[in-house]
Image 1: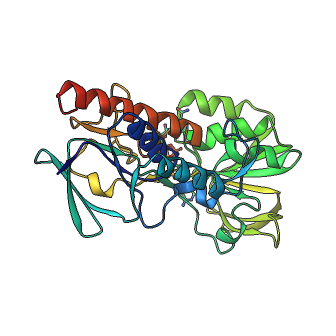
Image 2 (image 1 turned 60 degrees about the horizontal axis):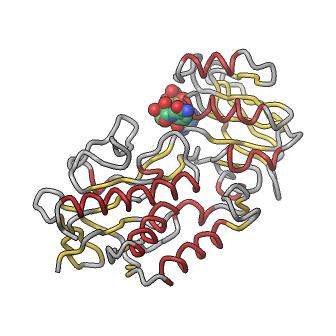
Image 3 (image 1 turned 45 degrees about the vertical axis):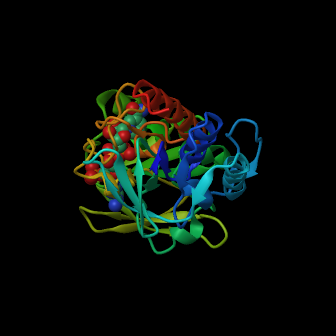
Length: 306
Ligand code: NDP
């Protein structure tokens, strides 16, 4: 039997693709992985997913799972371990079994990069955040630090400056790598201070972040700065290992899409954070998931496979 569509990944984009594909009669197989749910499993309160004024990330993912499962989607709790895009139909291996499929929706997501500080993991959700748009509102009237010098750091700092008391960007070089216009926005913002040539060597606090320890890389001098939040904006690592060498991937590791969700291979679609380096929001990922399912249906119909 050849599957019509296999969906790889179970964040908001994977589940949404599954919901659309089931309702479209495509009988999708959702390979949701051995640790399903994606990045939202690591967050606490989500307050920007429409229809849910406040919901815990894992509860939101459980709702999405129940929605897809309730519609009768076949769901495999295994990791996809191999994808072969050279023969057609394509081949996907998961749980030691090989599946053939006419189309694939890649919704394998991305992971935020962290600094690897001693106390960082313990304080995620307690003042350490990888998403300014998600968590900024919890830092009203606080001083916060943003680490990074790329577009994400610029965007996070500008966004936070409208909500919090003050923002300090800490960057390990003496210039930013971000696009000129975004740098200019930051450099002319009176609420944003910049500490160059420096790294955060630890984040302090018991129940909540109370400060950061900073090291100047030129002088090696260490100082402590009292702050209520640490936003880490040093990039994301999209989960594309299975597709390297088979699909076009950009310089930052994201799957390249064109004409909405289409990848460089016919019948292979990508949705959510694995291809979105700009927005990185659950609701956006869900939207991409629905688009990928609709694009897959059109592809299958054009090929007269449904
Ligand atoms: P980038 O890889 O562009 O930048 C990462 C930044 O983090 C760099 O300044 C890097 O410093 C720094 N960094 C990396 N590791 C560490 C570390 N361990 N300690 C301290 N600093 C570190 O990632 P972004 O997420 O900013 O951007 C990724 C892509 O997404 C880009 O193409 C960007 O243009 C795009 N983007 C676009 C947006 C938009 O258009 N609105 C918004 C956000 C992102 P160094 O330079 O020293 O390596």
